[in-house]
Image (cartoon, rainbow, N blue to C red; front, side, top):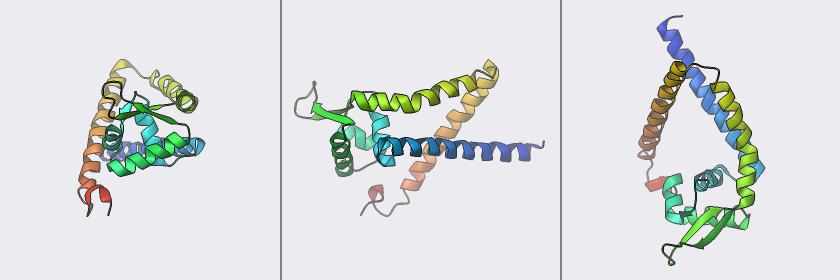
Length: 158
């Protein structure tokens, strides 16, 4: 196979992998009964409690939009809102036990199956795969930043 064909095959495979990951997240959002933005907030909260401001930055929302989404997720029983132990003037949000358990039921098997697939390759091959994914992630995030700069208003909102 020529290098050009190999590049095209790899680019197509990467795009299809991204599409497949998107399909998993769409299915997860359906199971949670939330939109994709709310699912991103839940994923962000997996690592521990966050302030509304931290949520807004992590998922690229305005503070008002983040607060609205957080209220929706609290009402659905997926997040709790409590006073910050370090600063009682502000609140932090955290996943509820039921949300964490549902996320584990959804994504646990995905992770286990992915690890099984990765074990098929040698350490050297895994280094190459990791390098490709890390560079691809950095490129995608840089492109997301570039695209956000095209918005006529900050955050693309009126």
